[in-house]
Length: 159
Image 1 (spheres, rainbow, N blue to C red):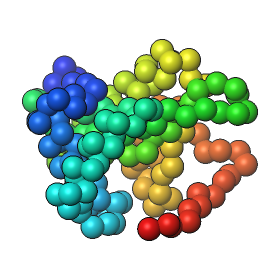
Image 2 (tube, helix red, strand yellow; image 1 turned 45 degrees about the vertical axis):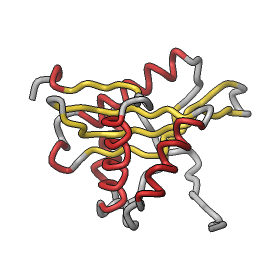
Image 3 (cartoon, rainbow, N blue to C red; image 1 turned 30 degrees about the vertical axis):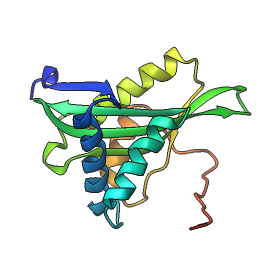
Image 4 (cartoon, rainbow, N blue to C red; image 1 turned 60 degrees about the horizontal axis):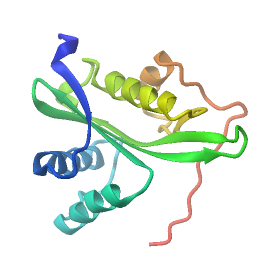
């Protein structure tokens, strides 16, 4: 694997190829054992890319490996009241199974880290499934740590 075979770029919302890639990669993630959901319908796909484009703090990065869309990172800029500075939360990180273990996830995270530094962010946060040891190894290798004290991730479904 040659690192120059991996390119990372912001999603171009005027490019139909980029928009199709976002939807395809998201569906791949949803169908993955770590996603565990139902694929997005055509209408949901349209709403997804439109909503990401319209959201004022979204960051959507696409990875290509040898000119093939292979990875996606979706994050949102937020604000930390504890550090009184911006922060970024990674919402989704997807690498196609056939392109894992060649540095795509790392490249996406490094690109996001550089954006966070440029924006003056105090931290990058993410959630990871307890049974996703591969992702946890990647995050640890890049300096991510578990929160201390440990925290639970809760939700209340509204729809």
